[in-house]
Length: 278
Length: 267
Image (cartoon, rainbow over all chains, first blue to last red; front, side, top):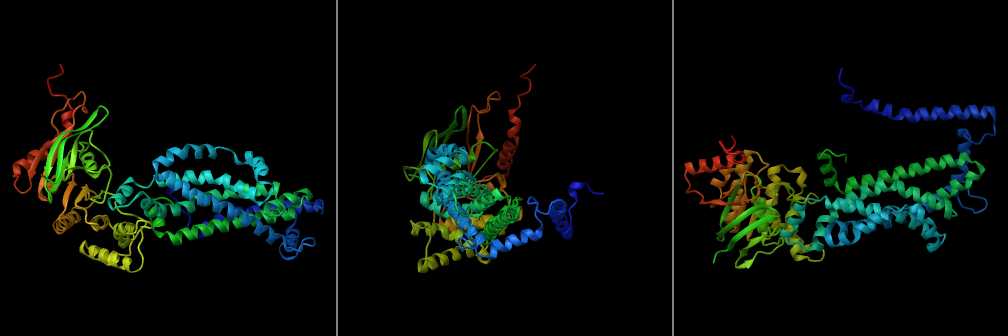
């Protein structure tokens, strides 16, 4: 008998073991929901799947009577657009300042302490300041995401730039490269796949800040809806919304990973051959 | 006046003296191999030629002028590792130097200018035996192939001086012999002045025109860093006899033992 640490499940066993916890959770929910509903048919805490299904149909396919809009798609569009703006602006800032900080000692000496300081401010604590400065509109919601994840992205990218072997920077100079050319041709292309990695890691926080901002300062969006229907204990709306948000988060992460694999094949084979996960 | 003059060069880090009183004259076209025990300052010396370190005392003159204190296209370099760019194909790695030269703003060429450089780079790659691997990425190449690429990449802008820091240290002996042939060919074709560090004394005795041995002449066992290494041998290659080879070989091997106290010092 081999040691447990040396035993690897085969493909079908991996599938089975992976799905098992999901199946157990599902069974657990159905049993608990059934038991509660048997006692009180109007129970709202753990609605039956039929109730949830009706709610999903109403939210996803029927226009809202008051606004004439289909709620789920409207909310999704608003939330994704805020997320895209917030993450996009942060990624750009992270890339520019990360590369500058990592590549040029004078910029690093100048900006690195400030970025470290900013990254330690809890973004939620300055949310009221954002509302005061930017008002209760789109801007302060996007700004919360930007303020929340940009310092992390800058610090991560700066670190990735510093990890590029010094030999490469010296080599580029012996090939006649200027400071600008080194950043453009040697550093920038090498940190792009690492930027995607960093963005993937920061997406969890981005969603957190998005939903927090929407809960407080919005009139639409996925986070807004969840917090709105909480007043009526509408678990039949909250639960599918949470599943939907999770699915969206998964799809975005999946897409970013695929983009990275297709665009930077050298990066993934390189890290795989170093024994790190691709 | 000789091409490179090394005038009484010292290198110190605080109390630690790495190199002391290095004096030498180098002619254009010299191929100097440098051997020495590890930690004796060979690489520090090469870095001073490269411009990433500067002498604490003394000066290195290139054609009568102090050698620039940062890396430049005059002096090509091949390191033992990390010499090529992992995000570029073989062809693009070699094209890079010309692109940097001809496109200051973007560092990238397009259209006819690009095709012209592509041809030049392909030519050079064919000569180092990489004609079949133009579209591959460095990680798809063996160690020997990567060093061939690093050589081709360094040479496209025709540097006057080529610095090699144990370029074949990580390669198998058979491949190493191939690489020796290649370096000698390139040296003649491009009329280079080469400084090559090696830990293989045989390499030093067979390759190039001059062999330098770096070693500490004075040694204080109580303070091993109090004295630096000097060039203890400067031998024209091909004229040294077997006994000298063995003597240097013993000297390099014996290095660690010399830190022990001589017998009879302690009661």
